[in-house]
Amino acid sequence: MKRYLYILLFATLAACAGDDMYDNSPDGPLELSQDHITVGKSATTVNLGVTAREATWTLSGVEDWFSINPSSGPQGITTIVITFTENADPNPEPDPDDPPDPDPDDPEPEPDPDTDTDTEPQTRATETRTATLTFSSGGVTKTVTIEQLPTDVTPPVQSPEYDVNKQIHEDLLNVWYYNGETRNAKADYNQSYKNFYESYLKTLTRNTLEGNTWSQNNDRYLYSYIERDPSGLNYGMEFDLGNYDGKLVGRILYVEPEGPAAQAGLKRGDWFWKVNDQQMFNQINTAGRLQYNDRIDTLVNPIADFSPKLGMLTFRPFAAQLLDEGRTVTLTPTQFKGNPILGSQLIRQNNLAGEPTLTGYLMLNSFEPGYETEITSIFAGFKEGAVTSMILDLRYNKTGTAATAELVGNLIVPAEAAEMTFARYEFADGEAADSNHISKFEPHESSIGVPLVFVLTSSHTSGAAELLINALRGLEPVVKVVVVGDVTEGMNVGMVHKRITATETGHQYDVWMAAWRTYNANGDGNYGYGLTPNGGTLNEWQGDNVLWSDTWEWKGWEGATEDPLLERAMEFVRGISPLPTSRVLDNPSRKRSGFPRQFSVKANMLLDNE
Image (cartoon, rainbow, N blue to C red):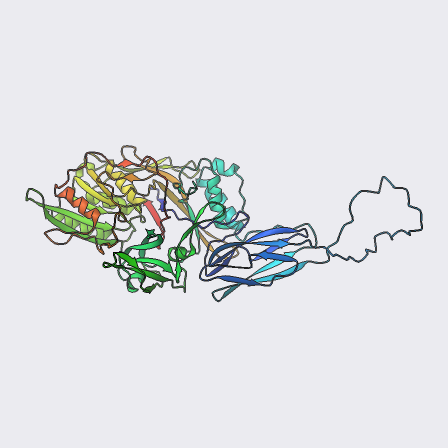
């Protein structure tokens, strides 16, 4: 029996740097794209990337043989230009091997065509110039050694990740990913690991498995990604970004009980607009590519021993607006691991005819393994309660294993679904690729066996969550699937994973690469632009929904909820609205617009099938 290790991932948007820079993505309060620069004797310029994560930056150590612009900068990402003068002695001493100067009284000799040339007199460099630049920001200092040689022969400067990039190319790309093209495409290992991986994947003309397009500049983001020395730190919350009154604001989607965010007092629906006393913003850099602001990155990529401070906004009914009243919340990241089951209940509600209905409700924020027993127990309770319909809330579900997603499917479907295709995985053209791998529905002994399933979605719904929705819609008419919410992310691809350890530095690199696509029993799998709800498109940001409900539960026998998605689903259950006759369809085309969605919990999705 083969064991497959596949990965699904929601895209992250990396800050970009110039082609000649090393890694400029912030891993600490102050990061430099290079720590050593070597140039030849000729006048030249070199770019250097500076990322100041917490405060403005300054530098010292500039010598008279080079200039730097700018010599200080704001918090964020800055590209500085170092301009070198020629390394030549303006008053060179005579070389003893040179012929003596001619006597002015002697007649001018006849030119010798074999020895005389028309070359200009040459200046000679005296010695290697060296300097040390010291960068300071927020109490942290880092240095860059600068060296200008007395010759035009410049030894090659090798990226610290040269060997890692080579290993990624030879052991991963060539094995899994369009191996014919990767072996013929030029690979420049002499750059940062992130720049190499991302730029190389975008050069592959047959790379159709990556993400959608940001509308600002038509630049495609990548599902494939790489991390160095992943910390596992998180804040135990998720947030979204949007516009309010001309400001870029963040809104807490949910907070995991007992996590760092919960302990700091944050809750679902809270608003914030500042990080470390600085207003958040997005920007388009000089290359025309969107890069998210470093203040947002502080929340997306937590670092050890650093606690960001959120500047909160408070809703005041008398003013009917969000106000900055000076409230702040400080977050301290930990290696917290929350429970993906955020809520479950049995909803009892009469329909329009006065007949009781019983509906199971489960909110799963991931399909992470380790909670199979608890999930099965919840469905056993639904089965004992004799539910007739199921509401599966996947609006924030973007991580986990497909094995868990398949388990949930098997806990829902009736016996008629047995041996029907759950998913077919079609691999990219690589040496290690299996031809096809098919998994089938196997209804669980605790299956509720309902013919009607409602799935609540948002633009965050991704990966294995979409895999499950696609699998369920492939069962119609055995199971009727009604999706309520927003168009999903559209990640219909899976990944392979490899961990690489650098021999010299000991750094570990987790590499995730899109390598396969998935299809259901009907062959549906082209939902790369998302799955379109057939039960009504609703968005939690729409309208004047400033005062957001802090819960999505259904309250009491009489029935009440402030959550628009759950309310719409229950309108179908109770017969207030007729069930849609259409199927869940692939969204035909869409470019991402607005702000990149960023999350404080890493979005790896492990797909582990046997």
